[in-house]
Image (cartoon, rainbow over all chains, first blue to last red; front, side, top):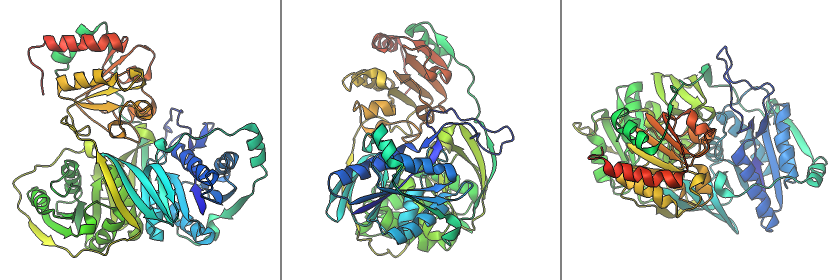
Amino acid sequence: MKILVAVKRVIDYNVQIRVKEDGSGIVTDNVKMSTNPPDDNAIEEAVKIKEAGKATEVVAITVGEEKAQETVRKALAVGADRGIHVKVDGILEPLAVSKILQKIVDKEKPDLVFMGKQAIDDDCNQTGQMLSALLNWPQATFASKIDVKDKKLEVTREIDEGLETIEINVPSIVTCDLRLNEPRYASLPNIMKAKKKPIEEILASDLGVDISSRIEQLKVEEPPKRKAGIKVANVAELVQKLKNEAKVI
Amino acid sequence: MAVLLIAEHNNKELRPFTLNAATAASQIDSDVHAVIIGQNTVEAAKQLSELPVVKKVLSVEAAHYENFTAENFAPVIVKLAENYSHIICSANTFGKNLMPRIAAYLDTSQVSDIIKVISPDTFLRPIYAGNAFATIKSNDTKKCVTIRPTSFDPCESTGGSSSIEKVEASEEFSNTKFVKREEIKSDRPELGTARIVVSGGRGMQSGDNFKLITEIADKLGAAIGASRAAVDAGYISNDHQVGQTGKVVVPDLYIAIGISGAIQHLAGMKESKVIVAINKDGEAPIFSVADYGLEADLFEAIPQFMEELNKLNTIQK
């Protein structure tokens, strides 16, 4: 079984982002970038499945500018076998990314495609579901547990009401939750080895898909600030304030 | 053209956020139709027909719709979409799972998790865990929009009497099988709609200690929330998680106990009307959004909090 894992380069989750003064977007110059956190879980799960002897190859793919390749290199350092970098400048919408991934799936013919459930920059939560629609494959979103059973997967999904278990036939798409596993760190020898693993570079413009923007971003602004609160001295004061000032209890 | 609202339900009755999504739909166009897809949904369809903002109900029933599988739902909605300018549902796990599948079939770029309708093609939505708001305009002719339920008031639930029209089911998608759902039953208010939420974080130190949170929640008639750290540590189940990848809550009162306040947690609660933080680390970021901060050891503060609540003659429910 072959697993394709999609990873995205985003502003690191620990960075407090800043809005550009002209309202055109978010400041990304000289800001620490990392792999989208749940994409790390997707890579980890694929590598674990391979280590358990249930997959033969793990291919990491990213779609993005030159530097996005760092995320593929990181995936190679934690166990992916080879990489694909679809090069494109600017910000793509999830629909465009899923069309690019569809082309790569047609060529690579993986049995499974994994990715994080949501990117922490645009918070769209769309790409996996869109790709499964385009391929007409089953989708298991928000996965917190995956059991590989021959040509089937049993997946536990985190839903608002609790947990749901579904069984999907291969080929299929799984989008991963942060609770799926604990991503490993790359060891120095593995980082060195990863430098020798191949990364195929493909120009998005050579794939013949429509990746034009359908959505215009008119303005980006800071959310309204909360007015500063106060520190109370003790519990009695807190309860008194909640009762008589805020009037919420 | 009218807008199509996808109703969320449990086959027996509507789920509460359907009413919030109906409000958002009615702000886009006054001609709102609603589709309910499920099995034995007669009562829920009737509830839907009683929402005054809904002008027509479309009902699709088949055994393979019983478990809300997106692979089964999407084709029938795509077929109906022909007659509508917008497809709307909530940005909870139901809508997040379903809507992108519909959007891709329709070749439309979905607009996720809006918090405001500016015009029928322009919306406000949070990005970067709510640390920025983007105003965006969709240029697709057909728009798929998910709405953040807590940013829209629920619509009136009675007084309407729209017609209910049966629609033919689509074929079953055979490569996905539902196995089971483990819902955690509770007599407490739902986290997403509760007036008061009491949340615990890593500072609780164990699942057993969450009993302290439970006692306060019972006293206040509150729902129980948790930070991701507390869920990851196994103190409490995932359906309690508040944050960027969990639930977004906007209660009148949010009490954060032993929660440091990572950006990702703040994303899920910082729109709450009144925020209380109890934490022994005075520098914890949670204090930056708290209206009332108490720097204290929670294991001393919680019992005192119960004691003070017990002294009150009345507590709003």
